[in-house]
Figure 1 (cartoon, helix red, strand yellow):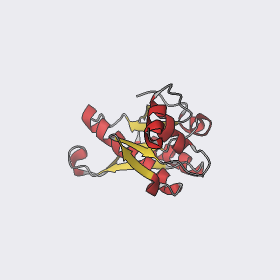
Figure 2 (cartoon, one colour; figure 1 turned 180 degrees about the vertical axis):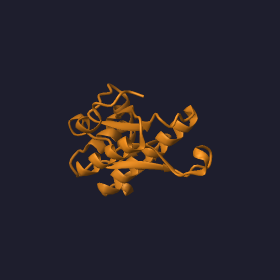
Figure 3 (cartoon, helix red, strand yellow; figure 1 turned 60 degrees about the vertical axis):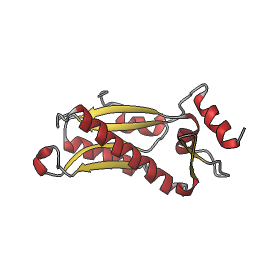
Figure 4 (cartoon, one colour; figure 1 turned 90 degrees about the vertical axis):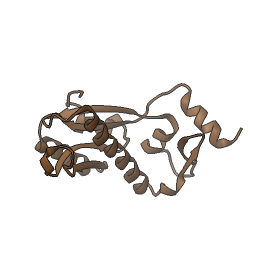
Length: 155
């Protein structure tokens, strides 16, 4: 069995989450479910790509058996590499205003955590007005993200 396949199988067995990815959605916009899913998807993908770039690991992404993996590296383990090896809890919480969303974005960036803030173009909702809808943080330990998002209600 190849090392890549062993890594993939190992990541499926006995899931333990050492990190989590926080998704923060504006509830005041009253978006449709599909719109929320699309916006959260944009945010999660962007946050992970930015984290890969930050760790200089974009070239370490491989596809095997229809799954995306991060190849092994001599670099120390990070919450991002743990995410690829073991998965990560994705937790969706809410805020009630643009100001609250922007405050979470600011706090994350001040803490050195990547925040992928999504600005929707407004083509399908929001009457053509570009609107901040949500953000996702890079996969990170609870110790780092809980001070920023720990008091927010689940969506």
